[in-house]
Length: 314
Image (tube, rainbow, N blue to C red; front, side, top):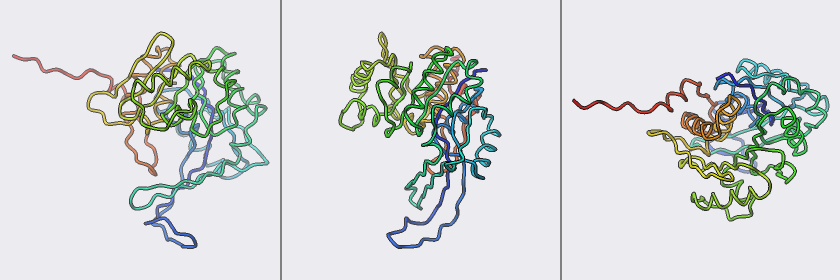
């Protein structure tokens, strides 16, 4: 694959602290270790796409601080194009703090910083290279009006537009009208369709996806955890199941799934083929909450897509 795509979304410096237990009010706990890494849906999706062979332009907003320099270095070394990253003198770079205790439970606090101040003017100033992108992946954590404008710019350049909103993303009809695909989990689908939050069956997920299509979205993709992912469009309903022998959870592999779908779509694959590729990529997820992601390569994903060898009977 040799695909060009743009990713718009949040970028954080993610701090990980590992105490034996979470502190109670007023308690001080000594942790065994602390470390930092790149965080944010936009940044992680851009890195995952680069590992899968995509030529990636990241649209995002950082501060004028040492954290921004660390993030730029890590993103550049991961193969992500940084021409779309703007910097703010008024707001610091976004920072997130995650605590993971000995039982593997986690708590996270985010300080959005520059992510919340990412305005349309910043986006327009750094739109170079978009004309060569076959696909734009719009993530979460930046203002809705900036996402909507990114969708318009991508559409004008002829790119296919994918929206991958988090549960707290403000999703308006204006934003939905500017996208070709919406990728979402059961929680976000329930919120957008005012349904009770539950583990959706395939039939209920399809029903709610068609309800969302009524708001102007041509194609809806619902992540259904270990069942795979469901595609719903005007004339088709299709469930992509994980490859045989895989134990990956598509919902838990959210950023990886969205990045893989965008890479495949940008390279010219049909949405059916792109979804199959994305589910296979999600099956390659090997890291646990709190651990640094180790994104799969294109070769690893293609290995999952190969049909199993059948021994000939003599």
